[in-house]
Length: 185
Image (cartoon, rainbow, N blue to C red; front, top):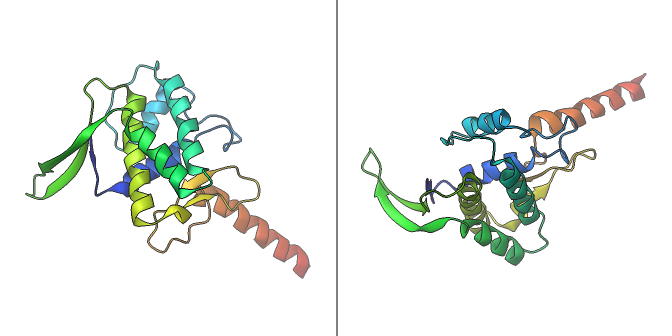
């Protein structure tokens, strides 16, 4: 796998989405509970990798490790945790030219690296890029009072409040709307 340094938000998004597949966050249970769900997750994130279902335990362990990085107390701890993710399978930077003649810094993963290690490198580089470009304050817990999710805010304005805006944000907005309606009655 080759991971583009310049697109740190991709790795940060994958990290956020993987962490929030956990049954800690989702009342319906683990969103990556089987090989089919893992394949769907990878496809949704444009990650081309064949799976056979044996990777699930490693992916679940990785999910817990990434969550720990997002919940660290200090920027130094976040950097150390993200560096540890990158070190799982990264071979070093490469400079490669794309089809349009543009040069990109890439991180290559070791040949035959397990899926979890390749994802760790992708997410680790994304988290490091976010820390470098946007700062530690972009690692946040979900603002919903009923959610245990965490996320990396890679938005331009940096005002994201919910781990899953379409779910958590919507729940909060509906609850606020109903509370206003009750007060008006």
